[in-house]
Length: 430
Image (cartoon, rainbow, N blue to C red; front, side, top):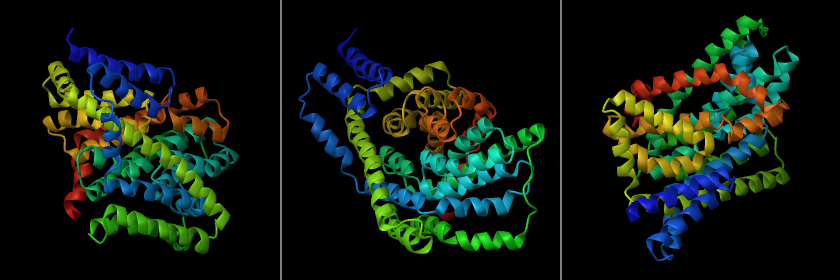
């Protein structure tokens, strides 16, 4: 066994061993990098150089702004307005509150950009409401966490900024535009699954549809929805960079949360900023340590080794695309979203491109795979949040998730094999 192979084993073996031992992911990434460089005899001054290099990116400045925007809007009374808007639009159907859950996550995801924030905020409102109207608690929880993944696909999403950086400068505006239709495909797939279950279990309908009620709720919610327009339209039309649009959106979010909806006072703003700093510190540490890890991967030619290994299984593009999805799904079961994006992109993106998958399509595939991973044991953070919010045991939630896993896989396959789903809007507007 040559020295290069041993170094790869040390790097990846120590990393996954620490993951299984529940070492915090940032420490696992950083320590495995240190072990590998020490074995290779490289100077340890390489590590701080790579940490700084990972943070030295103008586009990454958008990440703290998007996280701050999500914290302010999520704490500022936005959730209730969006629930009312979704209820006036689709609540009249069989299983109407389930449909509200799906549609509301699409709206709220465009504001928070986070499945965890979606589940914590909307779940605390919708799950008790659904249970009171006769829906099963495990079904209500499962639907809430499944629909929360729409928030990862619907822009603005700081995870898309991370992917754009890791992929080497892909247009953030194109990624933002690419997320809308896949988010709708996922929502439609979940809505079909919800309707079938609602018919089978005879879940109730909501109030009769009223165009007057819809317009009234739209008028109330337009302040929240305008935040999405500021970011997406500003970037697409070239008025702002992603970073500038995120900064403008933070100021707008502060104004709406404090002065329009009055869901936050200045003490609440301070608490939201504290939450933002906690989240941001985790993300930025991961970005820094993952850069060092990626340096080792490149130095050891791991992307080339992985490409040859996958291509040796089959030369069929369909099989390779399925293998890439399978790898990402498995990674999602044991790792959080940010490290998967930062570590796997340099390895798997070139393989995806070699079989004709566009980098933007791959980015949306990556987001959805990571989103499914957030809902799967043993490390599914959103699964734990949903269980905690609803007080339903995790085992029951996982069982209730089974039909929704199927719906999400269907959406994933459609996105993978019908590239127009992701590429049509970027091609039209960018």
